[in-house]
Every structure is written in C-alpha cells, then in structure tokens.
Length: 418
Image (tube, rainbow, N blue to C red; front, side):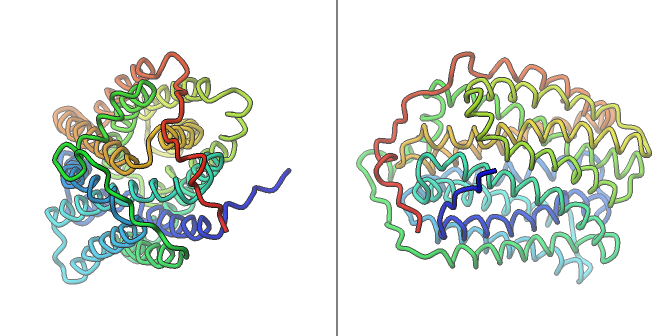
C-alpha cells in the first residue's frame, strides 16, 4: 500500500486541533440529553426541546455572523469560537458542583455551543480551502471524516464509563477541555494569514447575509444536495434524543451500553472515510453520491424495532453501522464538492448558510419528533422519522452534479504546504 502523502505541517496542526476537539466531543457524546435525563429528570418533550431550541437559537444568532467572518482572518475566529465553547460547557460542571444545574442552563449552553460551532465550521472550511491544494481537498476532508468516526468510536464508551464512575458531568467537562486544547493547536499554526479584502456591493448591507443561500439555491448541483441534506440530517438527528429516552428510560439500558451502541458502529465510519477517494476514482462522484446518498436513508426505520437486552443492543449497532458507513463515504464527497463549487469570497457565507439550514431543520424536526413522542411514544416517533426519510433520495440530483469550478483563483492561489 502506498503511504498517504503529507498535506503539510500547517494542515497537520489544523488536523490535530480538530482531532482533540473531536475526541472530546466523542467522549461527551450525548452529554446534554444524558444530563437532562439523569440530573434534571427531563421528560421526552424537554429532551427533544433541548436538541431543538439550542440549534434553533444558535442558527438565528449565526445568521449575521457569515458576512462578519467572511472578511476577517479565519484563525482568530476559530480560536475565539473554541474558547467560547470551552467557557460555555465549563459552566455545567461548575453548576453541578454547586448543586444548581437547571434545564434553562442546558438550553443556553446548547445555543451558545451551536452558534460557535456554526461560526467555527464556516471559518475552518474557508481556511482549509487556502491551506491545501485543490486536488488535496478530498483527501483532507476524508481525514477529518475518519477522525470524526474514530473519535465517536472510542469516546462514547469511555465517556459512558466515566459517567458511571465519576458522575454525569464528567464527559462534558472533558469536552470543554478539548476545545481549550484545540484553540492552543490552532494558535500553533505558523504563517501569515492575509486579511480578506472587501469587494464592492452588498458586503456591508443586510443583503450580504443572504448571499450564502442565494449561491446554494441558484447552483443546480448544490441546491439538490442541500435540500437532500436538510431532510436527511434533520430526521437522523431528530431520532437521537428520542433514542436516548427509549434506551435509557423505557428499555433501561445502562449508560455504558448506550455509549457502546453508538461507538461500535463508528468502525464503519473509519472504513468508509478511508475508501472515499478510492471509490470515487473507480466509480465517479455522481454515482457514489446517488448510490450512497440513497443507502443513508433506508436503515433508520430499523431503530423502531429495538427491544430490551442483547438483541436490542445488536439492532442499534447494526442499524447505526449501516448508516455511518454510508455517511462516511458520502460526507467527504459532499464537503469537497461544496468547497469546489463556491467562490472564495463567498465560502464563509455559503458554509454558514448551509450550517444554519441544517441546524434549523434539526431544530424543527426534533421539536416535532418530541411532540409526537409525547403524544404517542418515542418508538412511534422514531418509526415516523424512518418512514419520512425514505423519500429523501428523490431530492438527489438526477444528472451529474459536477459543474465548472467557479473560483478562478483555486488553481493559482492555494499555497504550497510547507
């Protein structure tokens, strides 16, 4: 096997910073719903509200951030957003030690973290675009994807064990610390970052806020993929709090089994992300996007049939493995295509619009899922989500979503990695 080519020291620091925060988030996977259930004694509607209100408020606050971040250096923005998440998450262990954790605090922390995540994601995507060569974008995104799934594979069982031994806020404290370490890693990236120049037109006016959506909805390939992603990610994420209530509450799974149910399937993420470049080379991007994009949607309904005991745990693991394997093949292709098809002076606003739309879809569908679960049961709400997602492949582009790269600078200004 040929060794993977280095993408440079600066990318190495960015990847390391991403890895430490990803592993922290993996360790704290599902921490807010877990604390809501075990500490605040929240009901299904409240747990779903926690997954809905935070992203919704975060998306609303993030709307004006796109134009603001677009014309600022990206590294300082990324560092600031890491520090904001560190400070917000740290308030929960402090409040727990003082005996004062409340559902309202969980909502506020969720909203702050969601806002910072959107701003960080948009800034880091724009920074990556100038940090590596255009033909290395897929490799870079695949490495991030691989790191994400390896972090989730290792983090949840360790986090679940830590919660069982040291208490329910242990994992969220580790998650907070990971953002501090990420900020330090980004600080270590050397090299001067030029301040983006403002062009003429709408950048300083309210119209600039809508430029990201304007680009997404007028670009044929991006429009189809965007609408598909809103539905798929919204429905999959809407089942997370419902599944937490079903497994931890109704079926009596201990926290370590809950973490294990999401950790083992992440091995599929490692496999898929490592195969992404190879399968694209062999079969072509459009075929993989359509095939794997369809496969993402067919498995979710299986979570409605989870039963107590080993059989139920095996069902969750099998369903999640199939979903994650498909996602880990799909996501690097989608992220690369999105960067390729977005002009550099619109990158932050486009990525911000994408994240805001995703957060809004998750918020709305999570709220509806919570209301349905409250009126019926978590299992019924999961079944409805599993049926609805089966329609999502109809939104995938029928023809190859490969348009000419609009950014004329891509071939000439991406710096050579040291």
